[in-house]
Image (tube, rainbow, N blue to C red; front, top):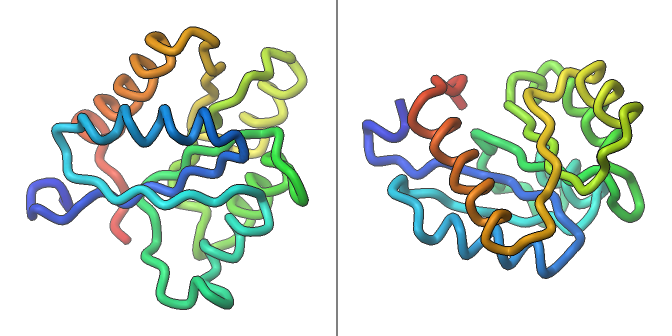
Length: 147
């Protein structure tokens, strides 16, 4: 396992809201587990990163993707569908983290094989707690697939 070998956990945050991205960065800075966080501001950039296209030719495959649904250029639902239909990417766990409480978004995300669906809290302290809970679960309890 990467954590046991001292190799940092690679995370791709797909988030267009600078405030939510900043809160996630701050929460992960306090992490007990060494991690590298990369940010894609929209769905097109996220897929280019994952497919190592253009300026992302040397990108490291993430161990975990934190995906917002409401993104510019290509929304998170489309990104999730493309990730889970790509044989090279489909094993990467995807945590949908969004403000949408809509039942159709929850059902569609799980139908597209999201690994979990989290509604972003509006309270800053609670948001940080949620990110730390994601970290605790995915870094210390779950065995991630090899890169």
